[in-house]
Length: 575
Ligand SMILES: Cc1cc2nc3c(=O)[nH]c(=O)nc-3n(C[C@H](O)[C@H](O)[C@H](O)COP(=O)(O)OP(=O)(O)OC[C@H]3O[C@@H](n4cnc5c(N)ncnc54)[C@H](O)[C@@H]3O)c2cc1C
Image (cartoon, rainbow, N blue to C red; front, side, top):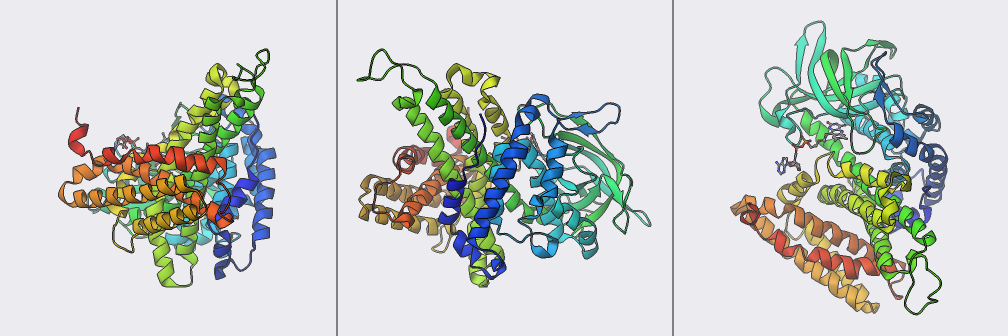
């Protein structure tokens, strides 16, 4: 099955979340809607012809360590595809012009990332992580560090990694043991082992800059005493020239369920030369500034795989003939797409992918406004909205990706269980997106413990008001059923939030217990809201499109049934 970039759906979603408003910000005066569409179209053509074809071989062969050189070798076609990707200038698109980028809105960058992740998730992770490195250096690096690294990371000539996780420090990053030592005249040296480092070594670029979290002498314990270091795989001279290999290596590439072409490396730092990025002991706040966008990028992966699952399932359902329908010729079988039960599956995946796209793009729009709105009050409000939406935009689409890949397998019947169907790869690849960049359980807790407020100006109450007004608009347009469910969703969201906020103070374990069901409720509700608002923006007088009506009328009520689980309390969960 070949992936077709859904250009119409992408353009439509960009318009719906307010691309025009973003482009009207002074920071984007150099670009208009037509040139955005042109760029997305050109990128889609590039990806369809250069990147999509390496996905299957990447899955079948995987990256591995070459025992002679000790270096990681990627599957055939990856290095060449990456060279073309860089030569065409694609990595630079979303970065500010003074960092060497094209200065496009983040929301446009997310649309490009969607296409890339749909075509080949493994490949897309390498530029995605480099993007995080660029943001870190752009925000926290010294002028000298920026001069040395930034341009080459923005262009994609070099790549970077995020090296946080250790065997005993996963969700609890503060438990890390990697240490940094300072020697006069020598500088910082890094000692320790990092695990699960994505694209920790490879043959795509001449250098890899590892952004490593480590503890320096005199650091307070826990997450407050962590510093951030840039540790290049090959040392870089003051003039930018490449020097000797640094004292670090990939000791193993993990064997894993999916994303086989993306090397997941155990990295050993044995006195490697590093440079402090940002303030000593203040590495984690620097990392967190960047993580909002990294998390959003993982949310994009979820939506990208849900889209791909839909394309595969839909195409198969048109061609596979099985069974008959009541009232049709008993001698002739029908395409399985004719069976209501298969239609339910197809619509579930299509509607979910669309809702996920709107959720992720709407969050990216808030990120753009939080960075570029000329009115500081609007900027800070957008920052709060983005902070609230990011855990939703990371966790909901990624959980949905696994569920939707499973539905796509079901549509394929027995063939879906075989590797030759291709949907097995989507299923295997999707699973990691709920785990890395913070597990979805940790994001649900972040939402409930840190982001959830119920004051009149809180993002949650803003959403509740939008739900009411969308319900009203749909009612006026004759969509009574959909309006009723959206109204119920507003009520359920608000009283669930009030319960959680009250428990957060008095019985915090109860609030923690309700976090994941609350995230499921909120993710589905925001998806439904955005679909409803899109309909009203278009005109609102006609019937809702089938997938949107299905999502609001048939899937949203399932999410509303999370209400008892949200309020069941921690006592209900002990075995
Ligand atoms: C393929 C792959 C690529 C990765 N890439 C990178 C990378 O590039 N860089 C990097 O630094 N890391 C990377 N990781 C690591 C990834 O981010 C961690 O695996 C993840 O953060 C979870 O940590 P853990 O594996 O230690 O699980 P644990 O923290 O042990 O969690 C196990 C379970 O317990 C739950 N849990 C843990 N603590 C709490 C809590 N306080 N409250 C409630 N529930 C909790 C979790 O949600 C999870 O369900 C990658 C992992 C994989 C598998």
